[in-house]
Length: 202
Image (cartoon, rainbow, N blue to C red; front, side):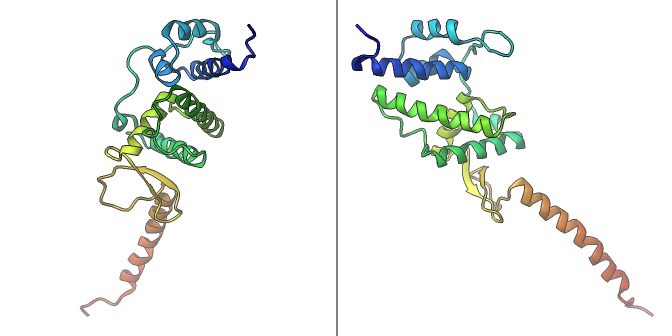
């Protein structure tokens, strides 16, 4: 038996994906759902591959994965990171979490694309705080459109993550900052116009 035989290609592919997920510090339960591998296999891989090269510490998250996207996106920085991440996923053809096929090997193929998208995002935003499992949550909630939605900045058309119940038109942080700056610079001029007008009484 040779590991290069065609019938073992799929299993090796799932193991390769699991190794990438371990490197992204993904929980065992999530890896099992995405690859179909057994818990024992994942733990064995984690013992071999789950070492952070920078610190030498075993990487292993415990407990339930993140489930509340509103808590995750309370900070403006995380909302901006989520928008950038969704933009990368859209460019790479990953739109929603709902299109995960039931077949195991289709899940493995899609997980490979998710890994590529997350790696690209972390390459573009090295200091990003969003994890791989948080990316899965954001993709899922964006597809549902109940707790978050995507829109475009009304000025520069950049992708934004917003509250779907918001009644105002959204602006990205850069355009919003420019709007405030323009408003502040216009106020002294309006005050000067009022001061230069002749008084109503003489």
